[in-house]
Amino acid sequence: MRAGAGFGFVGLFSTPSEEVGTAMAQIQGLAAHAAGAELLPFRYDPGKLGAQEVEIAITHCGICHSDIHLISNDWGISQYPFIPGHEIIGTVAAVGDGVRSLAVGQRVGLGWQSNSCGECEWCTRGMENLCPAAEGTCVHRHGGYADRVRANARFVIPIPEALASEHAAPLLCGGITVYNPLRTHGVNPSSRVGVVGIGGLGHMAIQFARVFGAEVTAFSTSAAKEEEARALGAHHFVHSRESKALKEVAGTQDFILSTINADQDWGVYIQALRPTGTLCFVGVPPSPITVHAFPLISGLRSISGNPTGSPYRIKEMLDVAARHGVKAQTEAFPMSKANEAIEKVKKNKVRYRAVLAN
Image: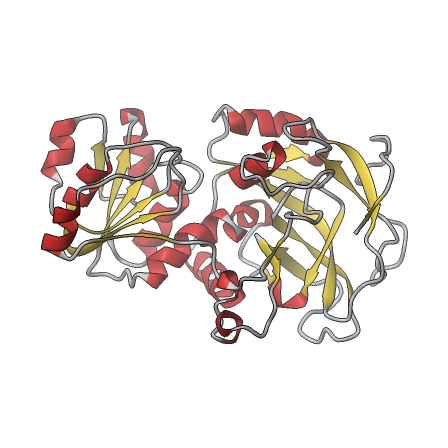
């Protein structure tokens, strides 16, 4: 994509004047120009719309912690300038000549992934999220803090009518991040599921686990979150700063999903698993995960991780959310206030997901 010059905030995200169904010559957004820098107005020429591409007129974009990591180049993969954002809701503004699955004006969403090779073992098995050539929506390209964005049509997902756009946007990354491991590990009404962390990911994980019929235990370092955790669907609450409370749940959980980005005594959570149980990470603690091998061996327990899901699994998740009333708790900000919203997210002052609105 060819980057252009910056521009003023006047008319930054106003409705485009061209007719519906026409791709824009230039896309406007808010870009980071250096690691950790404030986002500034930016425009770029996306070039000709590809045959399999869709251009989305963005109405909402969630702020994910991954965006903040990319802005700061915490993972060492960021290229500047770039426009963050990968929890995108909008309407189809234009489609390439080869697109038959979507129509102009249709409400759609786009998550972490915007393309894959379509030919490898993983793509042909419907596991495009594991494709070695997977393309991130805002990795080495421009994302959703903008008026429009483009992606391969296979990764542009129709949004069910029952889901409000503001509450649906975080489902496209945060939601699928917790939904996919629950499905992958076969959570069902006989399962006992623990969720570590009642935050941006955890509050959605509790809801999905409850929808699957599981007995849900919420683990949190904040005793004040018990009432909210139960309101979200948790049957039990464990204050994880109390060693006695943790000991009492030893051997009770089939599956524990850790959504936090903080260090813990992970051996305690391994002890909380029943035989054949799994501790699964979707949050990334800053330090290496260290546990003793014997509890794993003696109880056939395991440790795993899980990425986001395939387009098929995202469609499934959205349908489940629409039918069962699962939604992200959100705080909305105008797109032009993205920097303010990011600062609130960094300070954990948003409960639980910030969403930018055009």
